[in-house]
Length: 64
Image (cartoon, rainbow, N blue to C red; front, side):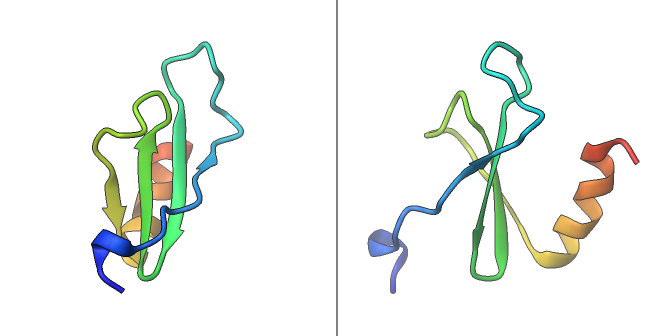
């Protein structure tokens, strides 16, 4: 499957995000990556994190 015909990832909004606040984050899992985007700008840039980067990223965003 090429990127042009790959299905759109299923995005999940963070339970900590609100519709009114500035911190609306969504994540989607694709093979070998976790995608992260701003839910208020779904067509905007996305972070694509590999497994090790995702594990390192979580404590930072969770404040731990």
